[in-house]
Length: 343
Image 1: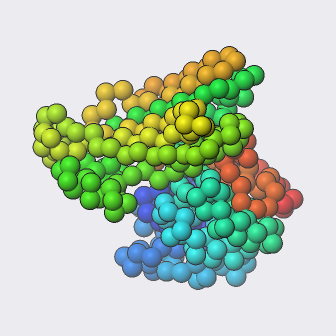
Image 2: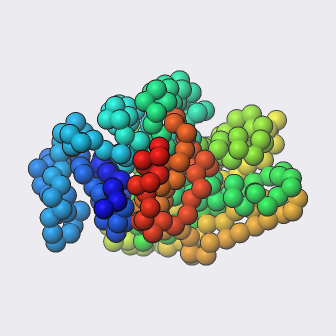
């Protein structure tokens, strides 16, 4: 019987739980451990925690050391928080297990500009152990960077790049609606924005990834966040929004060169978005434009990208890698063991 790729799931929330259920559909994967800091999950069988009607024989532990079996693991899939500075100790702990690490932490997707010293440190730690560390997801990691870079492959010259992602917040979970400021007054929105709770993490990282990979010599990346106000009362599954209150957020990241806007990434997340989409436009030779009508579903795509990237992760050179390093494709769930052994 062919050896399976042994995986530990670190974080069993909405995203981590969805990743677990998707991994169960991949024959070449074996979930050998799980960890979460929620006391209501610790000590329970992983299958019950993620909403299955059966046990998986894997108990959710409260710490990573207890979750990794004596025989070890090949990969730790890390799904906890968005801010790299907050999860860096967790990432280091994952590397310490001797397993490759794939994380959905948004800021890990391209941390080199915001966290140059931390990036170098994590890269060195992974290389020292011969491991791959990579952050990925739908945004950043795909919709507003990887997809743009793929489109740019067909260009001979690139002058400007624009990407637009519009998300109907009414179709998304409570946590995302809160991050979009749904239901807040304008004063409350301002306070939450200053506190750092209203924003999408990873937009600047996507802009820098595009700039560096396309050699666009950006001087700086600037971000702006603004509320989208409801013109009439509206409801979501979780909130009743009064007219004049916030129904969502618009966030823009600009890549500037000598004050000239050469990269523009726009993200709009609000209730009742009339035309959800993911679109990209590359101006150059030739001019190219693409649009995903309806947009790429955030949670489902994040789970899929994480699991589909696992085989490609094993082919990368050790160190801190990025989504652009990976040849992404749909994975049936077969044929991982040979690559794992070779690595």
